[in-house]
Image 1: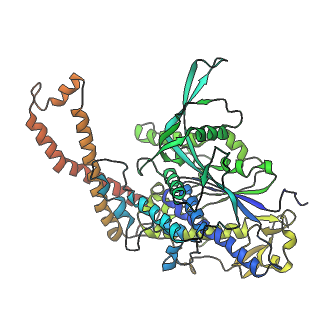
Image 2: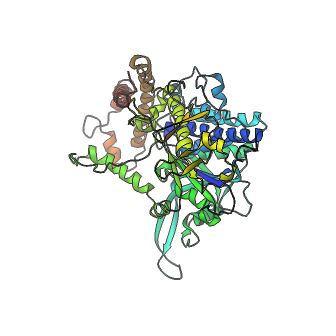
Image 3: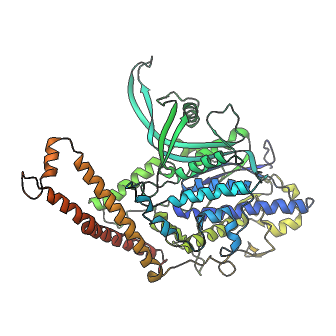
Length: 586
């Protein structure tokens, strides 16, 4: 029996999880998804009598960390017609795709190596340490994206994007918002204050002026685009490793209205926020790495829509059925500290109410994640190259990012062709599907025997073969016909040794700054006992300035260099071990 909705559209919410450099995989998925929708529109314009009318509308993007950056770049690319399909990642045309240029090239020229930028000590010359890695290249990347928006006059989002599109990025607010709790009825005395550190940058295209809980998104305005990209970058500012982002003059009305949206109409807390709020933001994935519930609230059930949720997650979490079976429980700090960090991270991201909403039987959820198979068609564990080093491996070599981008395209192709379907009775445009179209693009479910029609038909399909009640669509992306899809591996001498040299220079500069900072703190000591302890060198109760001078000179010339060499050697060993484990190193 056909369902009845308020319109015949299929409304989609995209949830893009955090991934650090594995955002290249997410970018590849989006490349294939958007271009499939473009091809559908082109086919319909050519033959509207025989091709079903496009009826898919994307209502919201929600992103965390790398997912936020992918969302922002996608929308700018869509508005500027800069997402031409990447079939050959080594072609000159590939860089014209804004997603590819951002996630695979990092906006750099072909001869440039991202490691040269990340490990450069240029940002440390002023003696200030903002992050372990030099991310100044991000400023150049944002400038490049903005320049592209200037040079292209097209400012029209495609028809499959809701003109009132919502875009939400998760952030982690280091300052926090104090929320006062009162236990007395007249609210005269604060009983307890909590600090709320989850934050959202909530944008809407064509935002109504009356809605104070959202920020206006105008992709034709350079200031709006820069702020949009700044928020996306802040969402991806991985703590310590990448530079945090500061915000100022955030309206109090926006924060209050946003909190009310988050907590619902029953919001009774009283946030203590100044009129022009300022804060420092880091990676949104710390507090909300999969903003699923936020997408559900926008495409929600109250509108009686035929809606689908698609989450793209390069790092889905799996906990074995018996995770501690046959494992020795170790209670020393070297084992407890990593578990503690994992516990805090997992619990911070766990949202009890959202979990119950997500698993409502009426919620149609779909997920695209990295999958690869061996010659026996068994799933491989090391699916994405950028997955090593907790997602930072993509900085090591460009071939890793190329592979993951192309794998994202391949996995999206499989998702659209074999999984993202509705049975004929429930499909809102089933009457437009001719027998010829069904023979080529649809299939019969082996278990239910129902005819399954694709929600987004892939008109790249040329023919279908059915064997053992299973359909196979051709042609399809594989290692034989697609460049860059073969799992990469790099050479120790050619790729790792030069990296170690650059890494050592960066570590040396960081050690110098850290030593100067600690020495300065000693000199600034005001407590007499501490001052006296700092002045005593080698001979008790006797001040010898020369030893301080010699000690400082020794540390700057020999000691710090030794420390840096030791640290960089250990870091390089960790990199080698991780790459070897992922079969990325020859």
